[in-house]
Length: 175
Figure 1 (tube, rainbow, N blue to C red):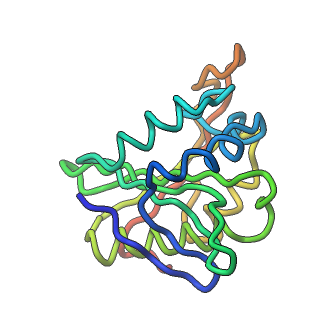
Figure 2: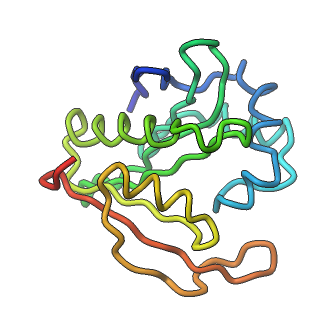
Figure 3: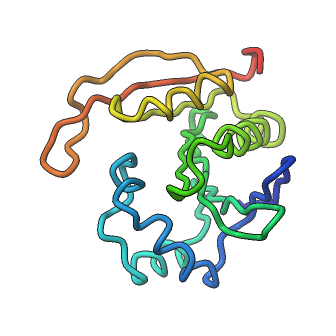
């Protein structure tokens, strides 16, 4: 499935390209970013970036680069991991540390969730975050997701077991 380009007031959500690699490494490679995500290794190398970027979209993943419309600067990433057999998707996102706390994650997540429900006709979108990252829970609640539970000590990250907070919404929910 081809990743479209979406626009919000301040952001452009577009497919990643190999040209994003030099900018991607210092952003996603920050320890603070890796500490809040499940699938981002630390340290993060140019080889990691190139492997991710060459993988691109697959049949079940739709990764978007989050770009500032004002400056054209890559500031993060967001995407849907589709489960077509069940007509649902998992939302995931990250932002470079300099862009935290500015509302970008909420703005991007609203656009991707809207796209998922309106264009992809998904029935459900879910997301999760580590309990140690309450800011991510704030984003998920702001976009209309409901807290559905906690998987205690579910993830082993850097030698510690972490709780995973679960959120979700269905197309019929108010957005």
